[in-house]
Each structure stands twice: as structure tokens, then as C-alpha cells.
Length: 192
Image 1: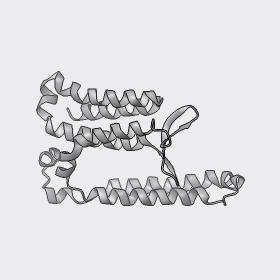
Image 2: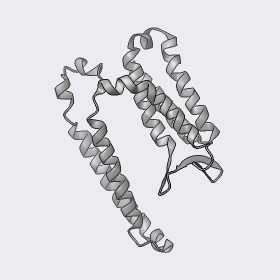
Image 3: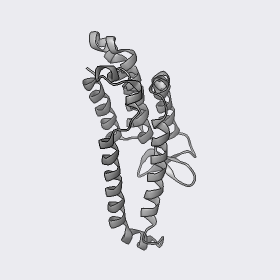
Image 4: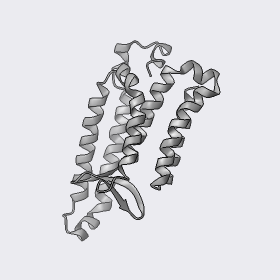
């Protein structure tokens, strides 16, 4: 990202302004998601005896938490993210290991994809996708020249991602693996 700003004629101060199209699109999708959750879950919630708007309220809480996280991340300087991007690959690896820890990882329908947080649970692949995007973006900024001139520049990040994909396949999570590969290949292709 930092490498793209000068090419587009943007200064660092101009890059801080939020993209109104992105914000409006995100808000529109979030509202559509709320409507869809509400319209599809009322009968399910009533059949479980938790009240008609249980899933809507739960979705709204997670949407609020995600919005707060996005606002916090928005204020982290790009240089800081770039500096810590190699740690993102390690964090992704650690998260994928958590699903195999007894008492932490949960087996649902024969797959160990979930981490138990006590009050809730989440699929680690969701954070892994974010961490891989940050890792790849940092790598692509730091190794821009080698990515364009040598095969080794491309094989290094692919090796890291191959390890993560291998761990996803052990869970097994084929869909998450394909999505992660698609993200990385797309980033490498768009990055030149």
C-alpha cells in the first residue's frame, strides 16, 4: 500500500481519508446482512426458545465488535503494519495450532476448525485470512524487486502459505484452503 501511494500521486495525509465508496459499500452489505439474518432466523430462534430476535441481536453485537476493530486498525500506521507483517505469518501458524489443543479446539462434524472462547467460539481461518493478507502485503512491499525478477521471490511467500494451507487441510478445511490460495495468488498477480 505504501508503495502505491506515490504512484497514484497521493501524499500520506491524503491516504488517511476514508474511501467513501468502500465505507458506503460496507455499510450497505452490513445492513443487508442484518435484514437477511433477521428474516431467516426468527422461526429458528423461536423453535429454540431463545426469543425471535436472538440471532439478530447476536449478529448486531458481532457487527459492532467488527466495526470497532476496523476503526482501531484504521488508525495503525502502514509502516507499523509493514514492520510487523512477518509476525502475522507466525500468528496465523499459532492460531491454526490452537484448534489441535485439547480443551481449546472444538471438533464439530468431524472437523477441528473452531476455538472455544467460553462464551462463544470462532473459526480461526477467519483471522488467518486477515493475517495472511497483512503478511503478503508487507512481503510484497519489502521484496518488490525480487518478486518481479526472480522465481525465488515468489516461492518464499508461497512456501509460508503452503505450510498454513497444509495445516488447514489437517483440520480438514478444504474450502478455507482454496480461499487462502486464491487470496495469495490474487495478491501476487495484482502485485505484478
